[in-house]
Image (cartoon, rainbow, N blue to C red):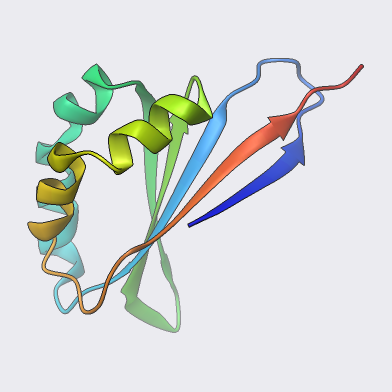
Length: 105
């Protein structure tokens, strides 16, 4: 798990969570992930996007917006999140990156 930062010039600060996961059946993963949205949203997720590598669609990335990076870290370390990730049937462990925006002075 890494915590990174980047600059937001718009002023609407959000934390980002990027999860990289390798699966055998990406379409099944997306269905399961979407069905889990209400649990993530009740814990602080604001929005999500799903992307994949064009050269390897089995490598899927979830890009999630959270209001605060600490909320995201607490959720993704929780039993609820661990249970969600277990349902993804990934090959290996998912990689989770937490990004927090730099605030302009």
